Length: 116
Image 1 (tube, rainbow, N blue to C red):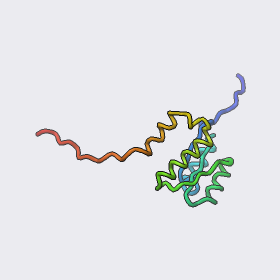
Image 2 (tube, rainbow, N blue to C red):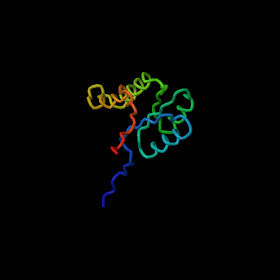
Image 3 (tube, helix red, strand yellow):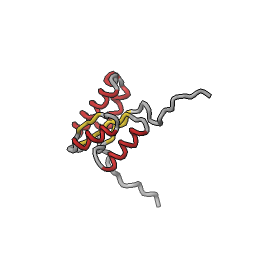
Image 4 (cartoon, rainbow, N blue to C red):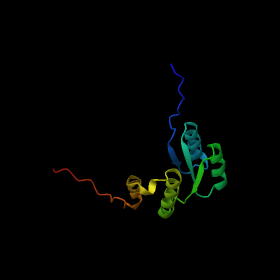
């Protein structure tokens, strides 16, 4: 049997991990990197911790955004996509995936009652 190169489960996958500078987000980013993913590290205010995590993930890129701001989320996704998927701007599919940010929350309605 030929000796084939072993591929890791997440080879060639780009995964953005939010809150990856510290705690559980950091642990998730490190695990994904070990599994072969190209990890994009998000942080809001913890730049030094994000840089350390990025280094441990094999020189991953870091992306700053306040996730309470839709404009900052859009900017961050644009940056991630431009750096990791250069043809993204011509891709209708990529544009469609970002439309969720434009959606209005659904209004909760009372459940219909069954007729008596």
